[in-house]
Length: 236
Image 1: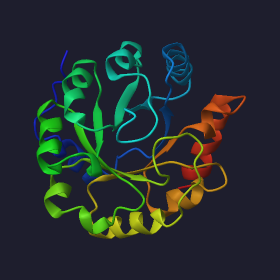
Image 2: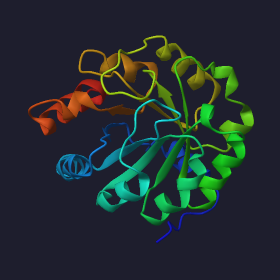
Image 3: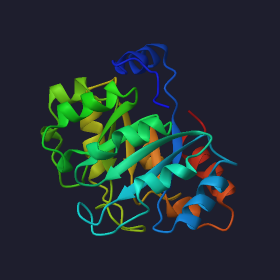
Image 4: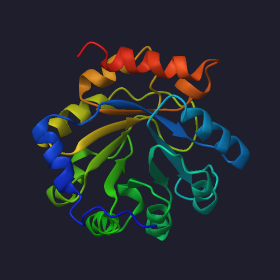
């Protein structure tokens, strides 16, 4: 059933900002081209985290493919979750995600013709609206009108499409620049974050840090998640 948040989802985010209650967190990113593997990742992540991200890839916007949206939502977590759409024509998937209980939908600035209209469409479905930007997309491409219609911005710190790509450190400067422009929109980062650099990422201003192999490639995934959380945010 479709989410029942107000059309202007920014109200809730703004109120959270005023109260200083926006949660800083590590977000396990679920990515697989195999439905059984995806389901296993979701069920395991549910045991140690309260929010996760589904990564969806179409083989067009990015070279790799993942489980399709309609398949992925059949394993939707019982916890909170978001969808990161690395696809062309992401709007084709919004209604399916909203009906499945997705709380935030993130699409790429580079993948849509009218980012403002796309963000408004997501909010109209009752989800938080997120915009992702690739490492080589200048921050100047994110307009004031986009900012006023988004709840979340996701800075890609790798070139999207594959697990395990190297971290692009220059993205941290983009996060700092955006933070100076806007204090309302929640800032996320995705790609190449490990225990060795997670503190630098948090110090730059990232509030939600998406991780894949830093959790799912570890023998004890719950322990890896806990260590990342403590290293990033533990003594703040």
